[in-house]
Length: 299
Ligand SMILES: CCCCC/C=C\C/C=C\C=C\CC(=O)SCCNC(=O)CCNC(=O)[C@H](O)C(C)(C)COP(=O)(O)OP(=O)(O)OC[C@H]1O[C@@H](n2cnc3c(N)ncnc32)[C@H](O)[C@@H]1OP(=O)(O)O
Image: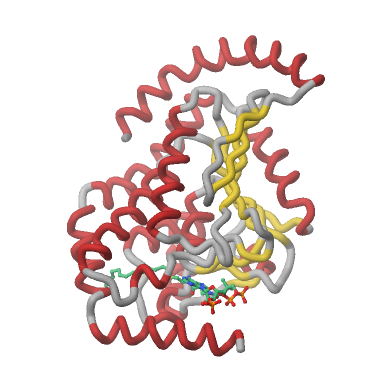
């Protein structure tokens, strides 16, 4: 992946040069009709604006955008498509239904299934993380709702996070509250954003940060009124895209490579570890109790 990234980086200046001439022609056209390509499936809606090179990816997996095996598979395929598309330089990740960005990993995928299923599921979680954290595109999370655990991880993978200014929405890695443990690469992703001390405390407590607290601790970069989340993401993206791709991409890779390599070099061991952890009776019991609590809270 790194080699492919570097190769793409080397080509980026030429692509930018031809791209800008090309884009300025398009821009004239765009003033009359905006050219937008759609790559949607039943779980993910993507709109790629060819004039700006920005794709908006909306997660649409009701009721709470939980990250099921099917969803994760679609997500990684879509991301790969955009990554390979030379017309796409930036990605805005958001939810199609406000109030919930993503409820994190689908707990039902981790309950009462076979070891083989758990292995397949965990590989898909790893794949999503490797692709999003390792993306060459500028990635911005437009967090328009709550974002626990795996949802928070997705946001943390992005280069910049804009959250709706609503204290009812919370974000964090709350795994310990479920009686499970955030794996080392979840921990590293958070630590790279907010530092070791905040991560250590937040992970032990399984802390969910209401939006204002998330800003205070640097878990998100900016809070804006709910109705401005998308437009702010678009204008921040436009600023980031003024930086030449190759320089920004090499810098991003330099900052993240050590973290991604740790998983790339230990993928099979990490899957084995997950399967042996999640199949324990005590862990299965904790997850069932947590799901029951969620249902009761609703009643
Ligand atoms: C030492 C070695 C370590 C090795 C590593 C080992 C293990 C690591 C393992 C796993 C890591 C996991 C990371 C995760 O992502 S776990 C998921 C954590 N997610 C949560 O805790 C979120 C729980 N949900 C909520 O808090 C709320 O639902 C939410 C705020 C998202 C929305 O609230 P709202 O009131 O709008 O909706 P609800 O009525 O609560 O929910 C509707 C419906 O959806 C079901 N549901 C919610 N979340 C999930 C989920 N994550 N997975 C599956 N299903 C979910 C909920 O039960 C309701 O269902 P129903 O009652 O309508 O049937």
